[in-house]
Length: 133
View 1: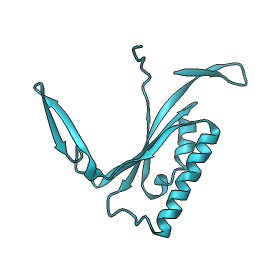
View 2: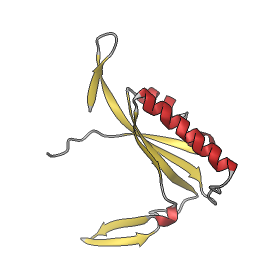
View 3: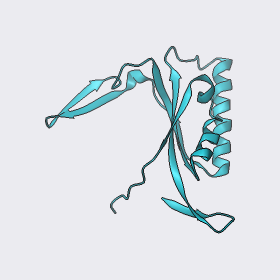
View 4: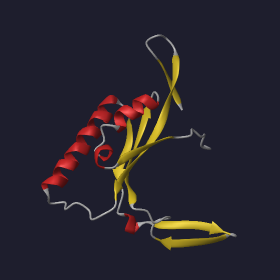
């Protein structure tokens, strides 16, 4: 985790937030449609604004839930199942990883993501851990 010094000379920590982009399940939008082009443009605009503000670390859409593979280890045995871990009507369709001063800033950016209008955006603070060298 890194820190910055604000205008008042106070040190504050910068947190990472993972935004999970949820949408109702259903048929994917036709990639040749105007709706798809408009949605893609809205995501590009939101991502460009976050990048310009220096908060965007990474983002990407996910393959459809049908492409998921679930791994469980029980009794020392690895079990691999095709499909998601749980059958639900809503699906995580993508993610955005931000580095923000606080939850309020993450909320501000989450509201600019198109998934917030058609589905919802779940914001999860990332627990900082030290990785071995």
